[in-house]
Length: 403
Image 1 (tube, rainbow, N blue to C red):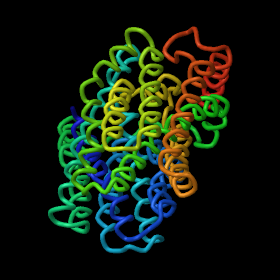
Image 2: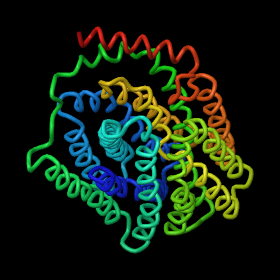
Image 3: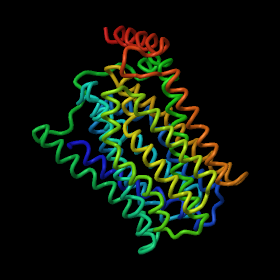
Image 4: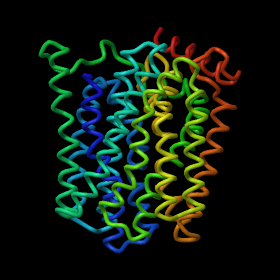
């Protein structure tokens, strides 16, 4: 709980942004393409911030990374309501992305260090469940606040809620460390670029599959609010529409960890992402209120079963000096966070939101095939040959750097 509660609070403010930001941009008269460019800025920030996040974790420790990234995210969230200029909004959301990757890498390192491989699936699924709880409450709260107090005040609340995560984090770390400041790595870690060169092949294999997953996931997060707006629903109704899927998430995220630890990672990954793909197909074939509700439930069930899967996969493949690897893998995942919204916006303007949903479904099914065939079950020795070979080479390179 010394990590989970602060992480959920920091995520809650970002959850509020999911329906509020696209609605704010559409209210300002921006096209679908411009809306999704601003939404994609968070992914660009995460890509740009991936390596600095890993370097910060190596130099100062994951606690400092988490705390500073939370401040960055909270302050940037407060700034949205002061402008409707596309460039300013792009910079604000890019900064949110910089903070988001820092909180994710920091908390992933803390949990990865605290639990063994036999419990890693459940530990990471708890993080995924915390994200889903924030994404359930956040969109509802954000949508209602827009109707009650307007966009500017809602963005201010987003920032304040994000910053509240620092209070329990600092309090619990002081309790753990006996009142001392956050701990730092006991020895200097190996050079960032040398560590990355040792794992280049493995990063490319793992990063390609996870980037495809995040393309579909990020596209889903923007297409649902846009379809709600296209159906002329109120901001509160759009918030509830986004939250429907997350409500289904909350019922199943504990099962994800159990399935991964008991039956292997693919036992959760394959059915979970298959349901996400099916939900996107439903949304594309029936872009109505009823279709959006059914799609949201199906995708919510799938997303719940996928809780912590990408975090667990990264933890399985990461070397002992995990910071550079996890930050670089996160960078590749966040390429999908950039591509997903841009793909939705371009296709929506060119062919309609329904076509965007169908293309995202196709991306998800390709991602499933890649993970099954290329990566296999990352928790077991019976991985595909190429993954076993690259893992062995990376371990040998890391040992040589340390010695």
